[in-house]
Image 1 (spheres, rainbow, N blue to C red):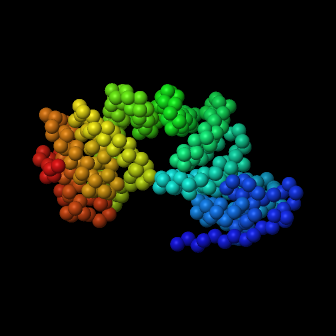
Image 2: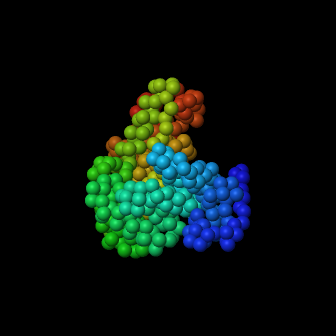
Image 3: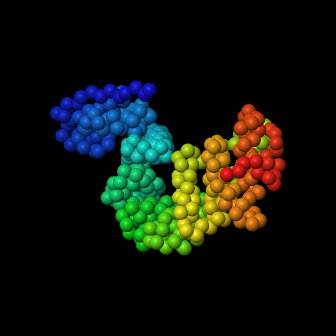
Length: 384
């Protein structure tokens, strides 16, 4: 268990005129300070506790040299070293905010995201386009908390920075338009949301390619808006595009895993963390439920999306979910004569079952039978 922070009272009259200490979280006049670093102040114990849980316990002692000016730090070499230390702090805060976002702990992510933006402004200056990701990070945190007015303000600042820097690359523009699209969706301005998601797709295609999973997420968000507008045919078409992109992506990851079996020393690492996995699972489940609820089901789409979910959960080690979604995929594909997905689904189901009988240490796969053979056998041993 993390040791709880200690605070000591700061007498308000101890501040020289014009030199008031400000709260780390809300920037109001502070009356408390961290008893460890003695460099960070708060307006009350609640904000001190929130900052400790959010980020301060990670960076408490790292702040001491940065917030303690010395003669050396004022020299050119000292200034360069100080900037490097600040850059390190920014990345720590960005990483911590992202981690908490992946765990859906939006309130706990606030201190890290705020510190990241303030420190980035300090290092880069107030007009650098490199501040945009920090603005978007804090906007994403507040979007999760429902603070839409603050989100609008942060995105307006980010948009202004992009407009001031016409040479800004497509990756940053894509992130900005996605955030704007999400804001307009939340406020009910669906036409503005569609326009921004279209720009999201355009810039994602330019940066990552048309078949990128990043691009597909823009298509998915557009489909969500069309679904809200009751435009079902467009929604289904976009969902189909998203499913094809993800099926190719996950099939490549599965192939990489199978190939790693040939090397006893190889270790397969998924290309995404648990937070990303949860987002991908939610996206694919949304598409599957949408198609299953439709009166005229597209069985090929059901099979494709369910197979994606089976591969996703297999790659992340949840064999029960892989079997469940694989069963749905197999059942749908077998209702389509000579469907080309049936064989692949059968192979995946048998591969999952093989793990439960003879696991091989290190790789997570059984040595017998061969994964290549399992993926091409004709008769399934698993029935939905």
